[in-house]
Length: 386
Image 1 (cartoon, one colour):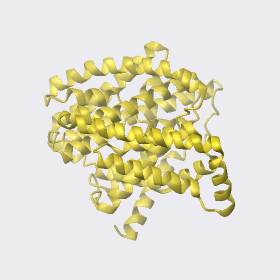
Image 2 (cartoon, helix red, strand yellow):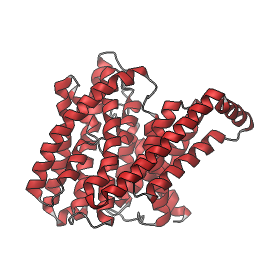
Image 3 (tube, one colour):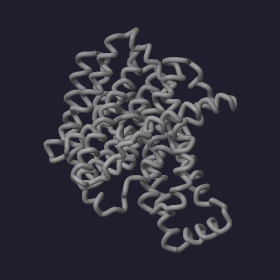
Image 4 (cartoon, helix red, strand yellow):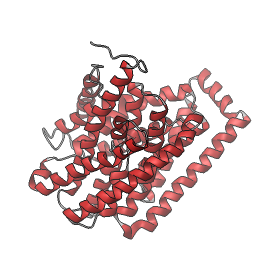
């Protein structure tokens, strides 16, 4: 990678904020970044090479940070979210039952024997997408908390279950790797809580702030990248490392200064770079060569929306059910692992991503409608007409 290419990537990533600028559209920034990646990547102009090692490594760093920030956005210490865990778990169980029926039906229709994979995809959610949307639109209330709990549970469990569903032959190794990451994260949580009780973290914070050392940021990045390295070594997605460490930091309590620093690194550079790399990695032309895969992708997207909409019967507003169906990391990881290990049929990786794009589009519309309805009811600020 060269500096001109990096400058091009940064310029293209500005499409995200530009499309999100009109508040009445209520579009999340990541949509424009994904579209920018499609434009300059394999699908359209082919100006960047997503397989370039430096680009890929920076995107992996961005993915880890995006998932970390998503985990820190889950209000683990909030008593309200704890009380919502039961409702969120109930919603996830209902979604999983419907997802199992749809996944088995899709595997029967399209063949390939990938029913476990389809079930995991249909039941999964993307905290990296849903939580930023919730934050950017200012969504709040008991129903939003229940949805947040459901998304957090679904994302974590799907990340753990994906290797088992995709390649049962390596299920044992993947399970051990997941346990290793979870165990190390537990140790980190104990150390952080001990530092909180003894006052060590406060002393580090004061020295860091007065001397401009950014020690907290450095320490957090060391732990995050170490966990990501453990995940890669044990053949587990870095999604798990980033998201679980984010939950740990959220449970231990994240200083505001650290939150601002992480926001600057993630949202200002590595996060947009990751989403642009993701868009650039997709080659939607593959779907044209395999028409049944187009139907599979659409069916996966619509099926996920239908499965998550079942929470409507448990008192959840339909738009929030559709929003919780938003997927990103799990389908991308499934497509990546499937390509590398030759586990998927031709065109099937693109079908998985197409299904994710369908859920993202539906979630964007649903979130905007819910925010607009809440604003009219006085629960949220009305959008700026300009």
